[in-house]
Image (tube, rainbow, N blue to C red):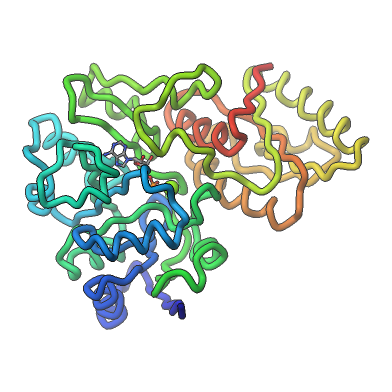
Length: 349
Ligand code: AMP
Ligand code: MG
């Protein structure tokens, strides 16, 4: 399949170029496009044939449901049975933005979207290109991250090209994505509001609106044999080609342990990559050392994480040793992605 690539400026969205993408969506094709979280791979969310193409291109397991992206509250109404008051409040406060809301689905939503579940995941992205594409297509757009399943999510068009060239109809290059991590998935379908995947909207921010919101423990404790409530969370995800270990705890202990392990692996002829932070970079002398930002600025760490994992892939690193961050605010989402990337190998020091 031939994949066309077009560039669109988010601050000056070219109507003709968007129309080209809209035509593809209307003809059951696939379009990768930027959002404020990561790049999405979009197709008409009401068209089963089009949705199948997303699963094919990504190699995504059929039991992992997709998020429907909307441009208006009105669009939500036909996709769900009913929007509870707390849902309306969350939509008003956090949309457009990195919050995905799960609600009981209407009959209009194809089963392939929800992987047979009776809830549907919906989000309104905060990105002009994404919103224009959805508005002009006039359908909800199903869009998981535009990467090969299991690989780090794409935060630039180059990442999408690496994974999906020849597998999708169109890639819209709209620059790098702002947040760099996926949306928070919030389940409002039951009695207890629960975060099923941490993401761009933090638990602390949600608590201001929903004081009793809880978090699915399975998403921060990989080794505890708890089955996650969101199907996507049970897979190894975001994975670099190399092995990876995350060190968590007191920062001095983290640095000491990474230095010790770097030496051990290098003595065994392994190529070591280190994910560190601005505050600790000077302590490391061996290995390929990349700082993902300041420990005082989790937004930057989130923004850089997936790109850094992909950089190490290009360097043929054997093992990545990564500094963990504290489990608060965006740190919960960052640690969740690092933990998944490392296949659960988190070492508390
Ligand atoms: P992605 O768009 O690839 O970043 O992933 C979407 C995430 O939302 C995955 O972790 C899915 O398992 C989750 N998700 C989507 N729909 C549902 C649903 N109906 N119930 C539970 N989780 C869902
Ligand atoms: Mg994904």
